[in-house]
Length: 386
Image (cartoon, rainbow, N blue to C red; front, side, top):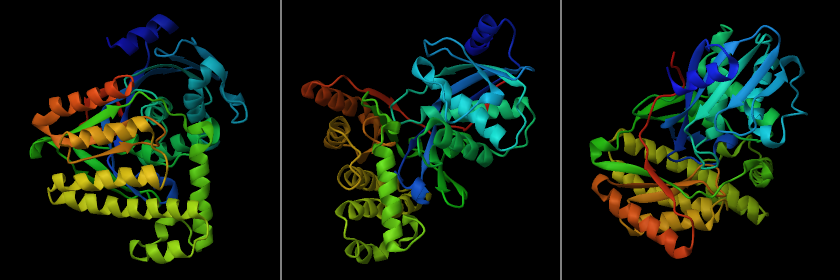
């Protein structure tokens, strides 16, 4: 019996009908492009969120997290309202409650309610999409319990709606799509406008490489306004340029577009988004041709763009990138929304101890808490475990 099944029985007094899981994600390249209708290249992590669940018949949604101290949260399904999400110690439950609300709002019948027990391996605040893993796992559980004929992209879209409208984070759809749709051994090349997916082989080990994830342990909070400000700035710039979204600006026309913008902040945001879409396209080609090492400089170029033009880095992320690069990484960059979280470093497999020591030593020398360093391998998306 799995831990989450045992905990469900201890909490609710009976066995769950099933256990579902969805992973966190790392974004190899394509940051802050998804809400600009652009292109991204994430892959799913081995770390995942598990949800044990069973239907109820009284319209009550009971939620409990093995990782949160708030105890079980009980909500009336019919009364779920984006204007009144759970607050305080129970604020984590806004994510699963939002998914239930999004399903109902889409006309999908889950009105009988459910008992859910959540346990997660995905670090929170690390830029690895712990919220999307939770949303997708809960969405898949509720869809299966109630026999809903939802596709994985539809499930991802509903999870994104939960985070946008119920939790209040104006994120794009990349995180949920990666968690719902990724396949093992591949990165997900996603057009966030059409939701067209292409699975690109991504095997570091076959080329003698590893991809390190350096969790700075600096927590980010994307609902604090900085994320929304950048999204609004991009939309304002697109309107000023007369295009539906910044994805519609061709790379070849970037300098002309920048020259037409009076606002210096708009120019910086536009330059990042357009060049980042170009980096996605170039790295996809390198992956397809087996030239992964050559992607390294593009990763570092992406970090510089996020640091200088998008202004979402922080000293700890910059230090992680600089230390990894100085220790021999082919390239390194922050991943995720920014303001903290994690960085990636593409390295030779046998260089892992040296790079790890260099980064940890740099953090110690700067007086920062030691980073958490792991390796990342492209893994499978959401699944029913039992």
